[in-house]
Length: 179
Image 1 (cartoon, rainbow, N blue to C red):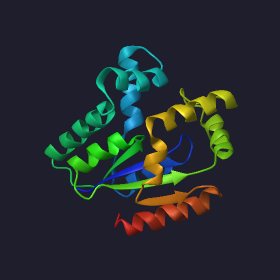
Image 2: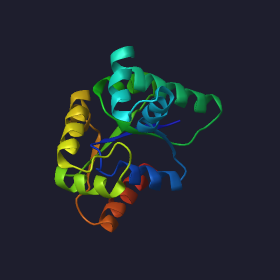
Image 3: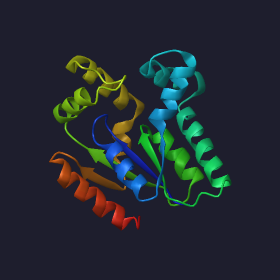
Image 4: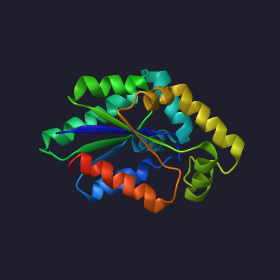
């Protein structure tokens, strides 16, 4: 079983990579979804849960929950490529490398103004409609260590052009991954 991680700032285009890979048979495990599930259980906003989980259980908690989910898939006999979407810290990368041989990181990059416009259109619960809130979220993400993950990734895809060009880059990458 091959496990690969996807990282990138909010609105960079991680979800499209996951969607296209899923259509080709990959299984997606979203760290953001894990945090959203925990937020729902706790009855608190997602942003608070992301911070609180780490304060309460340490830097490794989200990766531990993710690993647990992947190990369960492995026990069930899943052999597909598993993609971990939304890696945000070097602590998480360390844990995944310890638990999965040949762990690989793909990062997606897009500039801040473009990402902000995408997030406004996406309008998910944790997406800010004002630039100040957007910047605060970016600073929180950078505080988790996402910049280090992006800088040290095995592959980087720039997503600053039209959607068709981006899809072409994704398909080329997925072909390289034999998916």
